Amino acid sequence: MKLSTRTRYGTRAMAELADAYGEGPVPVHTLAANQNLSEKYLEQIMAPLKAAGLVKAVRGPGGGYVLGLPPSDIHLSDIYRVFEGSPAPVECVDDPESCPLYEDCPTRPFWGELKEAIEGALSRTTLQDLLDRWGKSEHH
Image (cartoon, rainbow, N blue to C red):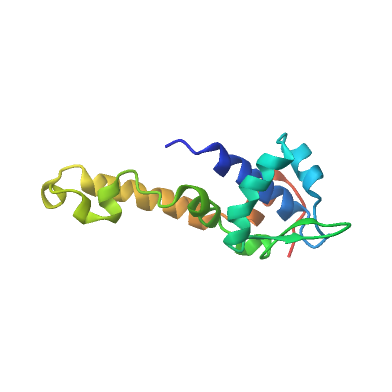
């Protein structure tokens, strides 16, 4: 399984916002520079995260981005779904109607197990967990 660059960069940007949680907005130019991204590309990444309620944009002087929820309430599965959709490796796991061999397929059960494993790992991990693993201070 390969993640898109939008998922990777979006998750990193969210981790940076988690690290700054409670300290006010992180300016777009700072976030872009820290993530080694252009401001324009960062805005394209942040737009779907904002639409999902995971981040909020603060306008005006001193504005930027803040998390929409505490770091302990944002799971990696939330971010993953914004950019990737379902973690199912094949369409039939989510949509049995998509394959005429659904009932008689020797591989389908494995693909379902793989989806559950990926979904489980993503759902068990929050932005706060990433910060804790990274050795950053705890935010509440």
